[in-house]
Length: 128
Image (cartoon, rainbow, N blue to C red; front, top):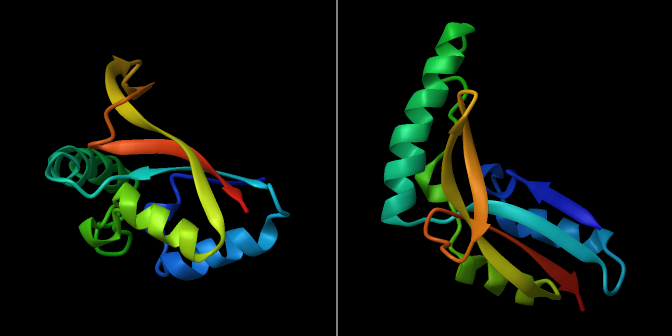
């Protein structure tokens, strides 16, 4: 099993990353992932709002935005783009669910699993 939680939207070379994931898996091995969809809704909620909140937190500890960008629009991944790469590297997506906003608790954003994938999604694939 390989797990990429909050990783795929940050890698420089997604092809190479998924090639390595596939290489590490045995046949029928499972790849668990979550990432952010590249939609206008994610641009508003993640790129503009969430990045602003994260930048404020980083500023409090003396880290500048330029040194450490949080999320970049061009690195967000549409599910169909991910599925194309799964196929390219010998994996098959098995399940996909949305990660949906569920409010705040103790100052932290809460998410719930649902059917809407417009902002973020979670799923798993299998090496074939």
